[in-house]
Length: 144
Image 1: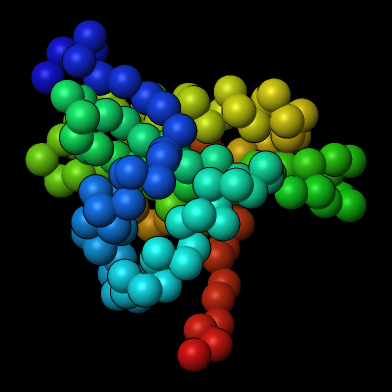
Image 2: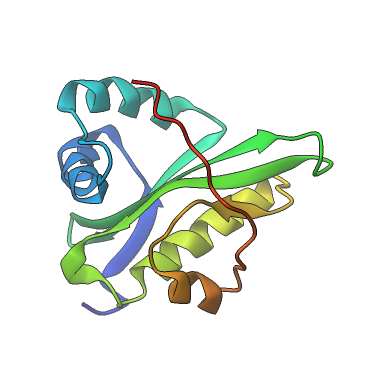
């Protein structure tokens, strides 16, 4: 794959099957279910505070990033949160994740976000190389 073949763009409804396949590869704790996915995707695509970016080569999705901007009280304005970032196993270490994250950062800046954050235990070297620093412990409680 060359950088000329790779394009980044917002997800579209027609990407649903390929996005679902990537989401299933991403899911460790939860197993994505198609019915819930099909309900969520149109809502995410029309949500002005969300962006679903894709990395596409020859019409095939090789990765995606889902992120949000939301207001805070402590940061004196909005912040950006990466909810999901996934690059297909065979396409890693080719700059796709970097491109997705840089695209998200540009979108977050355009929304006046004060910072970008995410919760992950994967690929700490990748995030450090892009200027991210470890900041907090992530706590969660599964409700179902």
